[in-house]
View 1 (tube, one colour):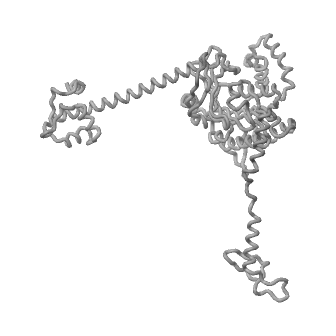
View 2 (cartoon, one colour):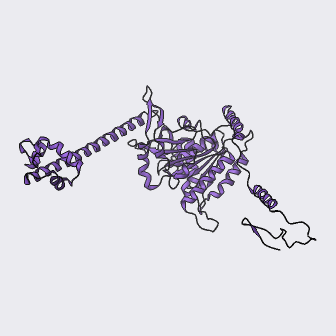
View 3 (tube, rainbow, N blue to C red):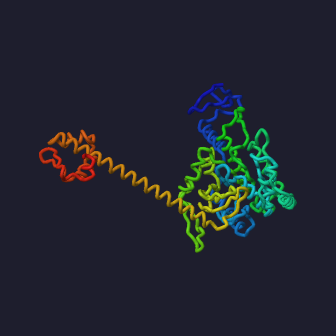
Length: 468
């Protein structure tokens, strides 16, 4: 048999060639038939095209109707002002919360998980930083309204211990589950099976979205080590990327609202407060001085502040930042805090004032009046600083022109009758702009009818005083 090539397409040995005898089973295959058969094989190998948009329209409208009827619900949040950031609560998707150290990221995460569980919404808290005693005392402290740190450090007296005991029975039956980190770390490969187990335990009995589920990952930057197919340990950025997209898979496939706590990189701690000030927080003020219609004019400066997670945050359904309000610290370690949602897919960018006691969070007692005062003071200080720098630049510019003018006067007095080109080259490096500025300052004191001359009696005072 012959191995032939037609149009660069190799024939296999089952094709019939000129050596075929009369006893062979079939005559030679025409080239046109071969090409037709090859085209059919190529069509069969092509994957099915993506579905058309039309097939998504009616199901999307049905989901919208279910949400309007209250069949599908978001995970509720404890503070009404913050709930509004996300359209009434955390809808299924991935939501990032970013802050630096010591501002209560874990406090917020456990607060939201506890509130969801108390509202009958199952919650899975994946704590990768704390051990079981700390998590337990934080939850008990929040539930009992007492500082968890007093329980942890042995500063709680009998009265506080009794309040903690009284709160414990109410927590035992809540649908709040906790996954703790192990000594070797907690790899994100285990996320899917944990969320799948939660969904199996709390199924959606009335269709998609009928059983909200909250998953908290605290926090993204300390997910455990993983290895690629060659056994190579993954870099932190790659681990974070994989963990983030596994969170998105769980949100999309299992209808979970995944809250991802993200730490700010140490070199960005100072940038966080600065970024918030540059984000352009604006508001209207009601009759009591409280901020309403709170908006963020430049939200992009806040997205990407998480350590090694900037490009991942851009894929989230929401990105929020916690930042201290400068000058609001009290004697108990508390401070006022801004929760700024820089990105909300369906709700836009907004912000709310909160108060951090040092151990727990609550909405600002005064509705944010003090925060508004501080923000206005910051804005005034920034404006004053800009004006000061602008004035300094203008002074420097004026001083340079005077120095050039003095240099020209001294040169012309020493070289009376010199040419313009000679003076320009010697005094201002032949720069036309600087020379024009000098002419404007010296005015009629410099004549150039038959070479340059200086009338010292007509010199401006600022130039005369420099020459002496």
